[in-house]
Amino acid sequence: MSLNPETPNRKLSGGFIATAIAILFCLFGNLGAIGLVGPDEPRYAWIARVMAETGDWITPKLYGQPWFEKPILYYWTAAVGFRLHFSAEWAARLPCAVGTLAAVIAIGWLGREMYGGDVRRFSTPALLAPLIFSTSVAGIGFSRAATPDMLFSASIALAMASAAGILWRRGALPSRQPGELLDSKSGRLPLILFGAFLGLGTLAKGPAAIVLAGGALLIWALATKRWRAAFRLAHPIAIGAFCLVALPWYAICAVRNPDFLRVFLFQHNFERYLTPVFQHRQPFWFFLPIALLGILPWTILLWPAVRAGLEIWRKKSWSDSPGFFFACWAIFPLIFFSFSESKLPGYILPAMPALAILCAVALAREFRKNGRSAFKIAIAIGITAIAILIAALVASRRINWSFALSGSDAHPMLPPAALAIAATAAFIAALIVASARKSLEDFALYSALYIAFCVAIINFAVLPRLDSFYSARPHAAFLQNDQHPDRIFAYKLRRDWNWGLAFYFHRQLPEWSPDDAKPALVLTTPQGLSEIRRDGRFHGQLDEPYAGVLYVPVEAARIR
Image (tube, rainbow, N blue to C red):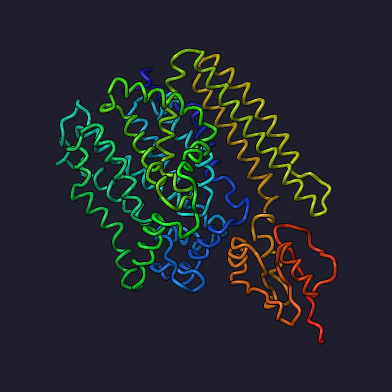
């Protein structure tokens, strides 16, 4: 089922090279633009750094205690970066960027295998799908976040690509005979890869890898009645590869830590799914808007993808449709996690590679219909770009207001905002021209360059200026030569600041107590400062600007 019947062009086009560079820049460009942020990044990075320092590659430890919230894969990969003396941000985030690139390669291969065409041309899903995934909000965001989510999603994408190769080559489609490659060496490799990648997913986040891949394949087998082909995925070769990759660490960790299986499997998997014990409750429909936001700016392409799906349903031709396979892959995580009592945005990430493929196929088909369809797509994506720009400008006003609190008269977000406005106007004009010419290659090229330019603005002009507001990195650098490091405390800080400061100080900051009668430097919040003022230990004006935390020099207690 080829979407590109044209004669292949064997030369690499300038557009292909430019888009490849744009994809790499979106994933790897300036990973250290901002320090580790939020509660997760510094916590996971701490564990990986300790693993590199101590040489204990089995038991994850946080502040000297075993920490079994997640399995080992992310910690291993990040610890390698710390061993190689990368900066903290690059060591912590590079595994996720590499995982995203692996997912990009997997979905590119799937686009080529399922829809044919020349991989050098934008008019095939083999290039459009990687472009859409790597330039989506979810692709860019999670490729630059030091968490296990992208490694988990990439492992599932690679496993599903292997499964698709097995199913299509072994007779899941009527044109093939079941089992024709079962005894050949080329037939064993996809089975080994399928099991091994599921094993990596299990090392990344646990048994959810088996559930998500197995659930999607089960829905596909039920609807298509291709049970014989689907059951071949449980071949002993695949099971053996899975066990070889996943089980050794689980077994060794359980032997060394008797509480491991109870804490990890029961508390952080079953209890997390079945109860709101971790306080991540959200409405049942939570993941639908998250998925729509995650695939931005390409969300509008889901509409023609849904139309094509309804047409397949009306004709009852889903048995022979690769698109239905990708739809099962995308839909099952939505359904499965919607029933969970704990919901976080990253849970939906395994569906994003499949959504990118569906969007790529829809985009290629719309451009092949007529000029009117291409024009509608161009206008819709242009409107999406304007909406995102408006949201960014509103956010920049809040950022400028925060800088104003620090006493600065400058408006540091104005130059980046002006560049973004000019780039968006040029982008929309270019899309209209490309749609008028029905040139999908120009359309994709302009989109890639525009998104890469916007990422560059964020990485080099916006995030560094927000560093002190959201990351503990500049605070630790400012205080690293303090004459009394033992008298630096935290007080009433949020947990993300506590973990961030601990990571960059390389030690936990103790919580300050009003009963402490000695002078101290207390890192706190406006609320904490109010309490210190009421205690009578601070009477002056703050010399340090407001930048995420307040530096409060506390006086010695008076003798009453």
